[in-house]
Image (cartoon, rainbow, N blue to C red; front, side):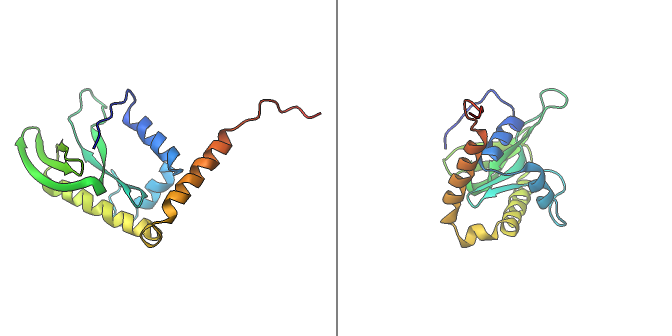
Length: 157
């Protein structure tokens, strides 16, 4: 429910989040690009409680500008219509925040539904063993820190 502003772009934020979750973006996109799942703007099911769904949230400011953002599909409480051009719909998030979206409500609902189907297909163990997720997350963080650790001196006496 908090607003957090960062001076980095979407790709950097996404890369940092994926590193924290120990997820390979290319491999995840290959898995989500299966038949029946959208070939572009794939959802990113990172865990049982973090399902990133791509939505067009703003108009591009300059050519090549990324106007797609990601919303955690589990935080969306309601999708409603909005008649305030260029926005056609709005999301009410669990924290009470309202988020305007360029796409129409039907398109947003379709993307959210596709994301949830993709998560059920790719993460069935997350629904079976939800208690293991925090342990696996901590283990991934420890392994990442060990990979970053370098001794001060590598000389052998």
